[in-house]
Image (cartoon, rainbow, N blue to C red):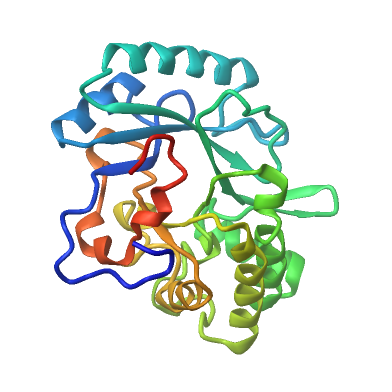
Length: 274
C-alpha cells in the first residue's frame, strides 16, 4: 500500500504487530517473557517491548541507565529462545529529555512527557488535577498557551531523538474526554497542532494510533484525535497501531476498531518486513 493511501475494504487481515508495550524494566506490570508468551497466545507475528529511556530529572517511571543495559541482555535472551515462534524486538520509548544512548536498540518511539519551563519539568500526563494546576500556575489558565508550548516541543522530537515512530502525538488530551478542560476544535489549538505535524511530516516517520488512554479508562478514542489523524493523512503521513500496553492483557487493545486507519507502509522500516 502506498504511503498515505486509503485502505481497501477487502484488504487481508492486518499483520498482528504491537510495537509499543512495556514491562517491569520500567513501569509495566509483567516481565518481558510474560509479554512474549502472551503475544504468542494471541498469535502475534511481532512484539516490540519498550523501556522508558532514562530521564535524569525524573526516575520514577523509567529505567536507570544500568537497567536499560539489563533490559537489552534479557531481550537478547528472549529473541533466541522464541526464534521461529515470534519476532521479538527491543524498543526504547525515547523521551525528548532523555540522556540515554539507544544505539543498541532495535527501534525507538519518540515521545514528549514533560514541558520544560525554565529549569522545571512539568509532567503532561501525571493526573487531571496536576494538569489543571500546571495550566493555572504557569499559563494563567490558558490551555491553548499550554498546547502551543507542548506542540512546539513535540515538533522537535524526531530531530532530537532520531526515533522511528512519533509517539502519542496529542498526549495532552489524556484528561480531556468530552472537552471537559479545553476545546480541541479551537482554531488556536488546531493551528499549534497542525504546525507541529507540518514539521514532523518531512521526516517520513509513522505516527502511532495509540490506544493506551482507552484501556486505562481515560478516553474513548485513541491518540491522535480524529481531526489530527485527518490532517496527518491529508499531508501524506501514515499510521501504525500501538497499544502502549503496560500489562500482558492489554496487548493489541482496540486494534480491530482502528485497523482500517493503519498503513502497511508504516511498518516498512522494520528490517525484513515485506
